[in-house]
Image 1 (cartoon, rainbow, N blue to C red):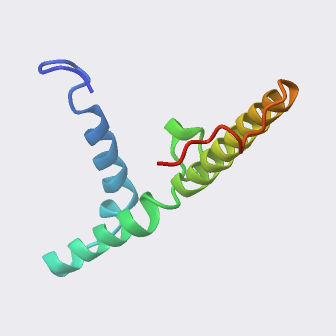
Image 2: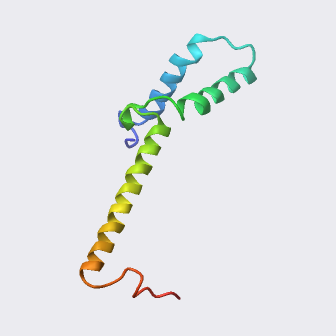
Image 3: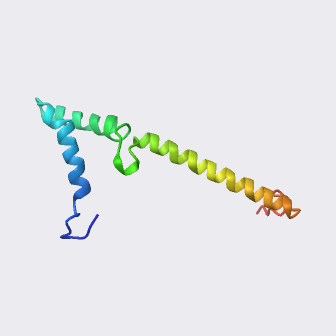
Length: 102
């Protein structure tokens, strides 16, 4: 987000509300404010947040993106642990020795 008076001040919000209006509000008429609120809640929590693809995250759904990042993080962690254990074995040390428990 930009600073006050910047052209990018509300770009993120305007983009979201334009999408909301185009994909939900322009296609329906609501009989009450409560019905409109429930439709917007269902759209955001049932479609926009979990399933809709977003350009910012490589056109993945947020859930797919989180799963991919979790796998990458776990892979990187296991590689780091493996390299550490290999390094300790090369130097004659054991990863379990030298551990101080307080």
